[in-house]
Every structure is written in C-alpha cells, then in structure tokens.
Image (cartoon, rainbow, N blue to C red; front, side, top):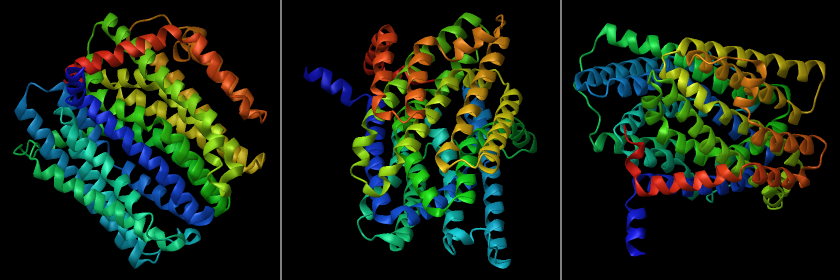
Length: 483
C-alpha cells in the first residue's frame, strides 16, 4: 500500500493534474466570491478587463504554437531547436514593442473606446500583463516539450492562488486594482521561475529564414487559434457592447463557472498535446485512427461526464450567490456550448500534426464569421435577451468540428458521407445525452438534466471502464506523455 502511495506521489503527471485540480477549485471558489463582492456591475467591469487581456494575449502571431510543433518535429536536432527558440524570443520581443506602441497611442490620443467600462489607467497594466504573458507562454511551451511539468504548473497556478489570497482585502470598485495587481505579480513570479531554472536552450542563431519559417507556420496557426478563441470572445464582446454592464456581468459569471468545469481537462490536453502531435505526425493511417479513437474515448467522454454532472449541481452553487440566482438558464446554455468544442480536439490536432495549418485556419475563420453573423441576427433582428446569444457559438462549434472531421478523414483517405462524418464527430453515445440536455434546458426544465446524465451512463459503460484503465496506465507509467 505504501509503495503505491509513494508511486503516486512521485508521478509527475498525477502531481501536475492534482495541482491543476486544486488550482481550479481555488479559482472556482474565487470566481464565486469575487462575483459576490464586486456585484454584477463591477464584475462586468472585471470581465471586460479579462476580455481585453484575452484579446492581447491571443494576438501572438502563432509563435508559441509553431515553436511547439517544430520542436517536436525536430526533437533530435538540438541546433535546430536552439535556432527556433532564439528566433521565437526575437519575434515575441517585436510583438511586445507593438503592445507598447498601442499603450502609447492610448495615452497620446486619449482613446475613449473603453469609456463605458471606465477602465482608465488600468489599460497600461493590462498591456504589461499581456507582454509578460507572451514571454511566459513561450517559455511554458519550451518547458512542456522538455517534459518539465513543475514550472508549467507554477505558471498556470500562481495567479489564481495570488488572487485567492488578495480577494478578501476589499470589495466593490476597490477590489479591481488589487485583482489586477495580483495578476501582474503572478506573471512576474512565473518569469523569474522560468529563467531561474535555466532549461531554455539559448544560444541559437538569429536568422531571417528561421524567423520566417516560424511565422509561416505560425501565421496559419495564429489565424486558427485567434479565430477559434474569437468565437467565444466575439460572443462576449457583443454582449458587452449591445447589453448592459450588469447583463455582461451575469454572462461573465456564467461563462466563468461553466468553463471552470473543463479547465482540468484542458490542463490534461496541455500535457498530452506534444505527445499527440508526435504520434499524429505519422503517415500510417491505422496509427492515426487508433490515436484519434483513443482521444475520443478518453478525453471527450470524460469531458461530457464532468459537464453533465456539473450542470446538476449548478442550482446548488447559485444558492450561495443570491445576486446571480436568475442566471441558471444562461449558465446551462453556456455549459453545453463550451462542452461542444472538445469534440473536435483529436481531428484539429491531426490537421496540425500533418502540417495542414492553412486548412485549419480557414475552417476557424469561417466558423468565426458564422458566429458573428448569427449573433448579430439574434441581437439586431430577433432582439433576443442576452442569454440566447450563446446559441451562435454552439452552431459555430458544430460547424468547426464537422469540417475538421471531414478534412481529417480526407487526409487518411477515408470515404466521406454526411452521416458518417456527423456520427464520427458526434457518436450516438454522446449525441443522445447531449440532445436530451439541450431540450430540457431550452424548455426551462433544467432541474431534470439528471436524465441526460443517466442516459450518458447507460450509453457509455464500456468507455467509462476504458477511462479507468487509461488512468491506471498513466499512474503506473507517467513517461507515457513524454516525447
């Protein structure tokens, strides 16, 4: 028994995931507490600050993403890796100069773009945070490819921990600068840890050709990533623009709560992503098929189990937040929407591994257009209340996943039919519980969503057993995720 405990405690993957789980739990509690202390209006302002940070963080030219893939694909050539790393830092440095120029323009021209949310001088701190994020994200990518999970966990955990400790200091508008300051200090601490532990392979040659190679691959990955993340960000932006600050506060609360459920799985995807890219880079269709099947079985099935379980407990959490009691419907709609993007994880990874960034970028671009178009129709023509705008994102995720599945099958030389692609992207064992949840939530019977979970358990008995086997394998052999 003691040996098993020691084995678990020395398992870097388990320790990483446990640290992420504890962090997400802290983040979850913090979100609820901050929402109460700020109130809907100032929580809307805080949500808008996070929205700007998100925009500036996603504008990264795809450098971290292309470095991730190129380091994996050239893992045996240390000189190439050093060159890629050095040129990546150069490109991020140039990006930082652009952010500084943006801050100068905000100062010189006294831009009133954010007047509704009255963020004032917070914008300069936001710019500094964004610059630090880009450097930390780049170093986090390098540390992950080098199978160093401690530093990555520190970077991902320190800001939520700092926010947890400072959120008791004040309330209302006085809490905003404190939360922003904690975010800034967390990024500085992460930067120090990354540099102190000296695992960055510096010493590469600065080269225009290498930088262009990073940008060439990164530009399409950038379009893919920024457009994909802009799907939900554009929804949040339009709600922030067309609806009141309070409504945006309610939506921010709902999105934060719903997204928190999947953060643990997103942490797992960060751990396994380099390994997946390495495996899916194969030209053997049978290997690719097995990898994607394994991803669908473990990652997606577990995501559905977590979210359907969480939806049952949402009313309980809302009892602790009286000011947000009326958000159950938007919370449930947001939950089933953010859940849907997990369906495309394996197919999108396959396209990246096969250097099909251009195809992937076009799919995400069209998905973004669909989201914006449907959102505007819902808002301007049908004049729906804010909670129904998220439907546009649900449709966009469906389109994105369907297209990724089509092109993944084309690369593998499979025969494609409409129904075959639909049921591969959305197998019946997941589709039926999902549709039950959608119908119940749509007709205001969210308290009966437990029926969707029961259906899920009935249709996924075999898959749940396999997930347990997979977890045991990772516990016994943590090096399974190494490249």
